[in-house]
Length: 431
Image (cartoon, rainbow, N blue to C red):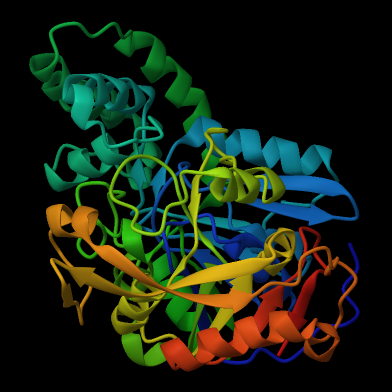
């Protein structure tokens, strides 16, 4: 891939984060912005995240590797806050190589990142079964159990692969805690250790101490684009707990997950859909359990990149957006999938909550309260039947679509700079 239209980055260090419950289309924005940056760094999460990029009808799926790698001048960093399943990582590397993407020397893995093993995935499934009717809706990719190992001080880090004669003992000690916890646990430690002997040798060229590496390059004037996984409403502290992921997907996770400081980040871009979706369980105030929700799901192809699970769909929720803005301090916003709303004659926007007759001024922490709120809706005219895929500027949008975008800006008080009008790479306009 040639890149002859490289632009100056909007800020030396920019973070792109999800505003809602994930799957907002962060990958496409990151892919487009990446051509203006030297480094794209992933700060948290694991292979539960999924970004799909469409370039000239060719589809690229990213789960662990930062999607900015499609830009030929970019070096990708997998930070210490990520939990890394090595087999999945190499599966992505091989898939990208088959599709003509050069990855040689372009990916750095933090030696402080924690390794996610197959037994973490088994435990994920067992824990979910134990919950019965109270299931979280996990992807069963082992993310939560791996972060649990990290917090329990029984985890194994990428750096441990470099001293492999000590690896088997650490691995068995880590695994022993899982055998004690679950009586039925079919797993062959010897086979896994043998597999990791070969994986460790293949991983060696990718491993680096990335904290000092990033600081040095920022001091040299190199630009960094931080790629957040998941989204604010899935944050372990601030999301709709317990129906959340196991890491901090708000801006704080960028600092702890990469080892950079707050003063380095000059721009924070929040990405949200023109409507709302979420995967898994938990309260969803603006959910449409009718033909409107089904229409959003089908037209928007709302099925998970990682799991293929259908996403629940509903109208845009301004209370969620305002809460996410409060947590992250977005400089600008990117609105995606505006084209999906071309199916509707009129469009609803959830502008507020009422609880037991009283208006709510803050987003509730209690899920019991959130599940009972009554949403106050505002109805806006739609632009039914107008194809937005060929639109190349804000001025070309139908008046009703411009009104919709402008009204959201008025409600949340943050400018919308980017607008997605279709699935392909070039279907993104600037306002």
